[in-house]
Length: 256
Image 1 (cartoon, one colour):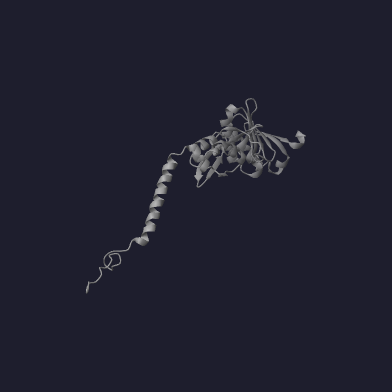
Image 2 (cartoon, rainbow, N blue to C red):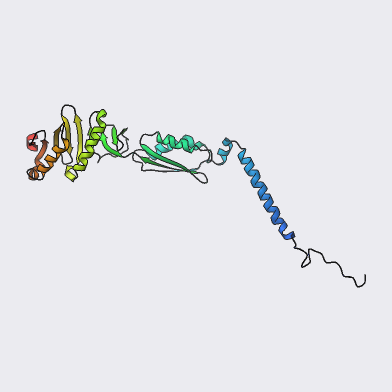
């Protein structure tokens, strides 16, 4: 009609609202992603564990430890049955318990490492002394089988009845605190019901100590080694301290 003006479109007007058409694809994309996520979670929760294991199979296993008494290969063999499972279904507690069945492993930690790994760390018992030909005495007082690969060259040797292991260990620790100089360190300590205590030092000197007053008799020898015997220690083969206020010395030449 003459003089009439066309009505402006609300979407194109400056004050009648906003144009949402450019945002529509983004809104649809978010909705699709949300639906896929929910559907994936629903499917994951209903998938059998065996099927999940195929998807999230363990691919990386990292083992840390001192590897003195046990080897990395031994640890891997212990864990092998558990590594057949997947990342989420792996029996972490079972792995730890299996590792602790090894008498040399004192503690073990097993943790998942995303996305497909497991990290294992073990601690070993600390050997204190050699016991016989096939055992080692550890700091806890136990006798454990001697690992073939372990280097025990610097460990002292203890010997005696296994029922007396705690007593022999206690006497060794007391002597180790008393004999601190290099030539006076304990090389071998043994106990016999008939002969009593027998001590061999790093220097090669042997001490017959009897059954009683072990530390007092060792102290008596140390005092003599710093005075009367000091110039002659290299010639001493053995010392018998089983006397009230004296010692008997055997010289290397006499022994030969």
